[in-house]
Length: 142
Image 1 (cartoon, rainbow, N blue to C red):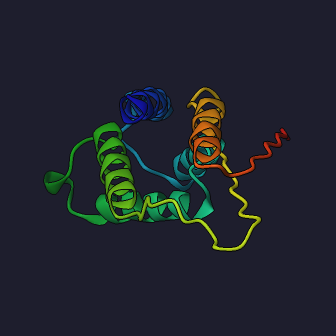
Image 2: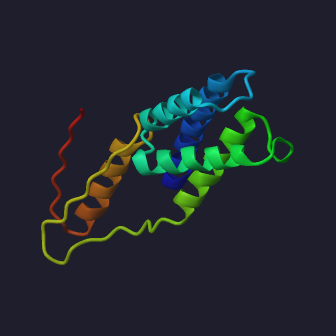
């Protein structure tokens, strides 16, 4: 159930980002420095992080360096690069939860608003408490 909710939240975030990127290009098939800068800003605002944003921008730039007959329009190319980069990065991540043998173990949870961070933390705290662990939750915002 938690995984289904996470997938749903990621789907909403992806749909919103896809919509923004489509709006970025409009009907203009040109990928210029200004469009790339706006796209990078969108990616950073979506909390993808600087490394992922840079990888997506570079992949998009490479996709546009192919001959025009071998690529889609600007929107489709950018969305395709975004989708494939996110899949590659998300599928190749070790998701196991590590715990130190000696306390305290500290977990930092960060992400986009509305993706279930608080619920996930509460569920983790419940599991740890049921294992007899002491749990302290702390929260902050920017």
